[in-house]
Length: 150
Image (tube, rainbow, N blue to C red; front, side):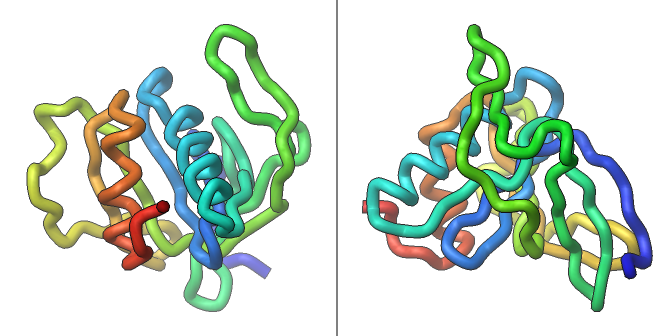
């Protein structure tokens, strides 16, 4: 049973055994970054899967944040110019990192220790410039202490 649950405007992927929530305003590049993470991970033989795009249910359970795909949009990712498209997906993941996509002037040049809190549980928060999909791949991999994608 979850202590706290809520619907959040976000996109969630699983990279290896790590759950990554991507938050940002509409049009900030959440879906594009998710797809780039999936493509990069798979190209290097790593497990990578979508959990949810655009909306996600976050809940706290056993002092962890869990992300679950809403049933109505499970297995769909937005492709700009086309709309929702089907994609392989997982139904849920434990959240290890939140990536916030912000205006370039609001993104720190060097990461500072920030956290994202949901239901009294905190996870690390990485703030990156919106719209720079390729530029976001390396900081995410480095933060997760993963080797370069290839």
